[in-house]
Each structure stands twice: as C-alpha cells, then as structure tokens.
Length: 399
Image (cartoon, rainbow, N blue to C red; front, side, top):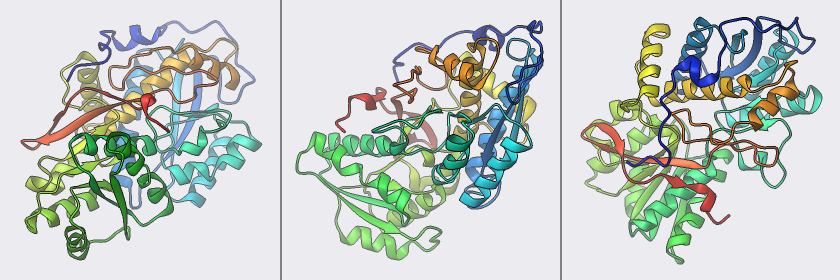
C-alpha cells in the first residue's frame, strides 16, 4: 500500500522536541501542572464486555508515556497518566470523571474510551469544569457537527464515516444489495445507517438493509440463516470482534462465501485468532497501519511495548493507544508557557500535518476539531492483516 505521506524518521525525543533539561518555570496555578510534571486523566474499559479493547489501549498509551518520561518528558515535565476503569458503563464513567477532576486535579482528559460513556460526562466535564477532552477512542458525529463541542478534539475518523467508507467500498466492488448486521443498540444503529448513503454514492439504487442482533449473542445460527435467506450480495458488520468471528464462522459453515466488510473496532489480531480460516478474506478499514509494519515508528512501538508492557503482544488497539499518546505529547510540546488548559489546546492547533508514522497525518484548528480524515484499507490474507489498496479520504464523502 502506498503511503499518502511518507512516515517520518524521527526518534522519540527528537520528534517531539523534548528537552532533557527542566523548563525554567515555577509551579503553575493550572490544574495538574508543576515545574516538572503534568497530570492528565483517562477512563478505559479495563473490565466488562469490551475490556478486550481497553486493556491493550491502556498498555499502548502507558508504554509510550513510560518511554517518554524515561527520555525526560516534554519540555522537562514528565507525564503522569492516571487511568480509571469505566467498565464501559456511563454512570461509572461519570464517577471516574469526578474523581479525576476533583481528586487527581488533571489538566486534561486524554484518550478516554467509549462513545456513550464519554458523552455522559460532558455536562460535568465540559460544561461545568471546562476540562478539555482530547483524542477520545469512540466518538459521535454530533460532537462535531453542526456545531463542535468546545474543548473536544478528535483523532480518529468517526465511526459513521468508517461505515460510509465500507458502503462505498462494497459498491465499488459491484455489490448492490448489502446487509448491515449491527448490535441492537441505538449507538450501533446510528452508525450502521451510514452504509447506504456510502453505497449510493457509487450505485445510486444500492440498498443497505439493517439487521439488529442482540449484543452478547453467542449462538449465531439463527442470525446466519436469516442473513442467507435475504440473499444479499455482501455483508457489512458493525459489531464487536467476538461476534464478528461467530458470524463469519456461521456463514462459512453454511457454505456462504458472502464478502464481509468491517469497521475499525473489529480490526484486531484477536479477530483472526477467534475466527481462524473463517475470517480469511475479510475487508476492513483501519485507523492505524498494521502493527507488523516495517517502519522505524512501528518498530519503536514494538520495542517499547515489549519493554514496558511485556504481557501485551503487538496489536491494533495497543498501537492505537501508543499512537494517540504520541499525538498528545506532540500537542503538549507545542503548548506555550505558562501551561494551562487554554495553551494546551493552542498547542494542538499548531499541529499541522503532524505525521506520527502510526496514524495518517493530522491537523487541528478551532474550526476543524477532527484531526484526521484518512483510513487504511486492509484485508485478511494467509492469516494476516495486509494492505488492500490506497488510503481512503473520508473528507471527500458526500454528507
């Protein structure tokens, strides 16, 4: 796969403009800031139904910040990254937000996990306390359109646009009748609806029928029979990776060779481990390059993960956490003194075409709070995730 932009060749410290010498400033009045440290907070699903995402996400972010602090931090300040387990529960997430703001006194929230979970905190975090929410993993289009929520900066392409990309891709492959199988939850349905507009950009009379499936379903036999009976040309799956593996296995065992397209949350080595031969040929959009990529930046990730999180094997979610931490540190490095919540946001606005070597290049501004618009197309071949064509620019989509 060609890169839209070449990956940088900068070492960790050089790439962020880090300083081994402490910055000559006194302790600040801003929350979470001292002369030699900055405290930021996050919540991630370390237990519960989606810990399979949250645990490696945290490991990747921790590995980056640990390496960063070992190298001296950012402008002489080490990053204290405080993570609370939200168990993918909105009420537990609100409690975590209160603890991080009132007890841990964080400067900002970085890489929080969960769409509905993070949104539940906005009245307290954004409206009442004016704490920035930076680079969330999980977000919704109404956070940014039509009017952006102040203080929220997104890193990855929205789920809605990911599914729109899948609809376009399926139609480009000649599929006109698409079945969209999704978790029976309002958040999943809202995302799944974007498949049909995407397909119709390519084939004006294409259809993408929605099929909700109860989340946590373990017996996919009835679901598979229902899919096959509707005789679609292709399937788009908006579901967890565990359920995707069950659906793919069921379809193949029924003798169906329907092509399956999936969005980024289901792109994982665990998908292949669970699905085995049944997920061969999956097509997917990914937020990051594969963790097997032969580049200095991804090799650095693998080295630091092995050093600071040895229990974690390289995978997409830990790579995402690592890359998001790297982007956060880049914005922090650009923040002017005295370091405040306002100057931190301004630091992010100075990131223009910043290339982490993990995500496509990102740019932020007050009127463009979504940093990236690019997706990597991948497929499963020979039991591995491999590139499947040119990067996809969602900024060109018809909304």
